[in-house]
Length: 168
Image (cartoon, rainbow, N blue to C red):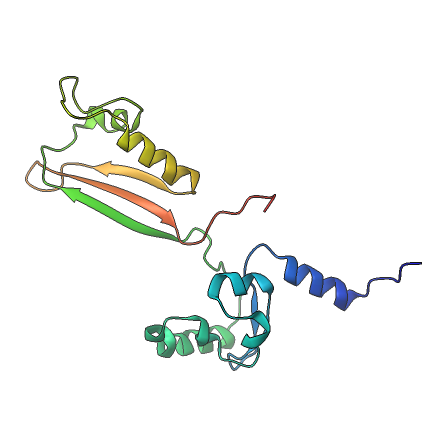
């Protein structure tokens, strides 16, 4: 006969089965628990992190400022998002003729170019770029003109954290 699963065992299973890295800290910023997914994210064995300061997981340049942020949080704890809707914003700017307003959506469609007479362009690059960005949970836009009636800025937002599917 199977023995009953206790609440602490069930909690431990759920903690380690989480699809994202989870770390628990005490009020002083010391790691008291880390799940196995965190090992994949940071390269530290999850059990080796216990007892270390949370700043171990941050770039060195952020250690000092994070101590203040952590202290402020513990003085008034509240639920908050940790990385949800967090994106890297990247802009690629050129100094060409720009993109007319009427073409700003069309240039992201497959086999579409800025003009019908454009030579040396297949109309594939921007369509594929848009598709890759969107599949990974990001978005792209073009802002034009950028300076003196010329140029274009292709701005895209790339998720800071990988998108997870329910079957991962």
